[in-house]
Amino acid sequence: MTDQDLHQEGGIAAKPTSASRTTLSHIMTGNDTNLLGSVHGGVIMKLVDDAAGAVAGRHSGGPAVTASMDEMVFLEPVRVGDLVHVRAQVNWTGRSSMEVGVRVMAERWNESTPAQQVGTAYLVFAAVDGEGRPRPVPQVVPETERDRRRYQEAQIRRTHRLARRRAIKELREKRAAEGLDED
Ligand SMILES: CC(C)(COP(=O)(O)OP(=O)(O)OC[C@H]1O[C@@H](n2cnc3c(N)ncnc32)[C@H](O)[C@@H]1OP(=O)(O)O)[C@@H](O)C(=O)NCCC(=O)NCCS
Image (tube, rainbow, N blue to C red):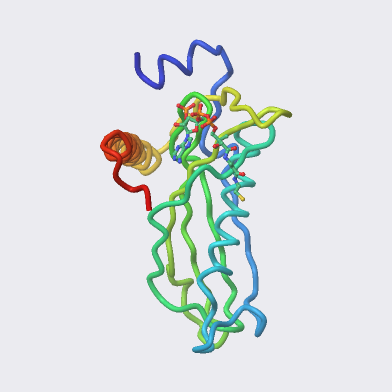
């Protein structure tokens, strides 16, 4: 049974990508810098998690928690004064999880040039109920060719995440059974 088959058993109305897509904008200040004077990566990661969380909450219609954050890539430094735009959308949905794709753009404070892409990230959120247990999410409906490409790429990442997790779990169980790793 596929993820989609499992999902559709829940009978929740699907939602288009555009229903929850959002952009969070923030001006970088002196409080956001690292020792080199550019913006600390952790500050950007917080904005990424905030924007992705907002999208996951909107798509799933309730609370959603970050399950994983992977492929956070910093392409260019962000500087004090830059106006950062963090664009997020649901790329893919499973039964209770959603992959949110995030693109980070920076408008340079001292240049009249278009916003430059400075980072990307992919996060998995799990929708949870009041007790923190996973709950079903609406299926996302990609609307454009770009959305469909992102959906397909997200499925590839999902397959790799599950395979990696399973392989590491099996290795640890094997080593534990052999009495290794006891230090
Ligand atoms: C995320 C969490 C709810 C998953 O709970 P769980 O009991 O492992 O539940 P499940 O195994 O059913 O996982 C739920 C979904 O999340 C996905 N998931 C869980 N852990 C994942 C991970 N590390 N990476 C990617 N997906 C993950 C599962 O594949 C499943 O997806 P699906 O329902 O679409 O198939 C739980 O681990 C949790 O509460 N973690 C803490 C989250 C948190 O506090 N985040 C903020 C950090 S400060």
